[in-house]
Image (cartoon, rainbow, N blue to C red; front, side, top):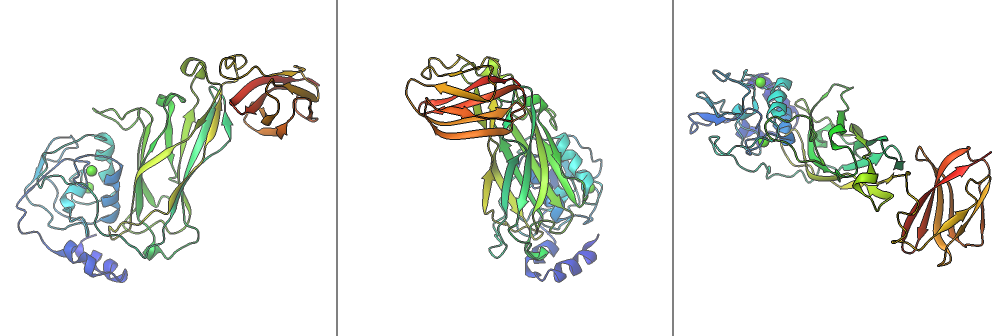
Length: 386
Ligand SMILES: [Ca+2]
Ligand SMILES: [Ca+2]
C-alpha cells in the first residue's frame, strides 16, 4: 500500500488530523541509522516492536541498501520521511528487514534479535510511550486463567491469555494490538519446557512471543519470563473478547526445589502492558484478572511439615468410605479431598476432630487429603479401597 492508498483509510476512520504528521515529509533527516528488529527505535528488540508493524502495515518506501537482519547499525541514505502518527518514529525503522514494505516479514528480525539492545541509532533511541491516550475507547481486561485448579510433579498445565471486552465495541474504538510481559516463579516449573502458543487460527493477527529458551540469540531472556505481542494488520482487531494464546507449563520436581513445601500457589503476573489502537493512541487497560493454581508434591508429603505444623493424623488409611482427622489443636478450618488429576472431590468446613467424614463414591486409588489449620496447610496421601 502506498501513501495514496493509506489516505482513504485514514479518512474513513474519521480521524484525519492525527495523521497529518504521518503524511509530512521530514526534510531535516538526511539519513537514518537503524537496527533491524527495533521497529520503534527505543533501543531494544522486543514484543513492543510488533505494534508499529501493525499500525503501518503494508505501507511502502524505499528499500534499505545492503540490508541484513544482523544486529548491527544499518544506514538508510534515503529515509521514508513518513512517521508513526503519535510517536513520530520514522517508518524507515519499521521496515526492519529493509525490503521496502512493512508486513509480517518484518517480525523476523525481532525474533532473531530479541532482547538485544542498542544506543547507536540515528536519530537516537527514545523510550516508546506514545503520548496520546484514547480516553473514549472502552477499556478491556487482560484475563489469565488456568485450565485446572491443581497440578502435580511432572504435570503439564495451561494458562489461557484472553483480552476481554465486557461487550463488543465498534472496531473504531477497539485496539490494534497488545504487548506485555509475564513473570512467574521459575523454581516451580521446568523453565526450559515453558511454551507459548499464540492463537493463530483466525489468521488476522501477527504475534511475537518469547520464553527464556526460545526466540533468543546472543542475549538470554531471564528465567521465569515470557514476552507476548499481538497486533492486527493495519486495523483494530480487538473489539470483542478474544483469546490471545496459551502458555504451557510443566511442574518441576518440588521434592528437590522446595523440600519443606508440599503445596504452593502458582500464578503468572503480567507487567508492562501496552495496548495501542490503529492511530497509535494508547488504549487503557481496565484491569488484569489473575488466576492461581496449587502445585502439589504428592510424594513424601507426610511428615515433612512436622516442625511447621502440629502433628495431625487421620485414620483409617487405606480408607473405605470415611475417615476421621485427629488434631491436637482441635477443629480444622477446612478439609478437602482431591484426585491426583487435580479435581476437588469433597470439601468440609469447620471440621471437629471427633467428626466422621463420609465420602461414599470416590474412585478406589490414591487421593490427596488437604487439611487447613490455623498454622498452615498440610497435604497427605490417602488410599481409598473398594
Ligand atoms: Ca524496540
Ligand atoms: Ca519489510
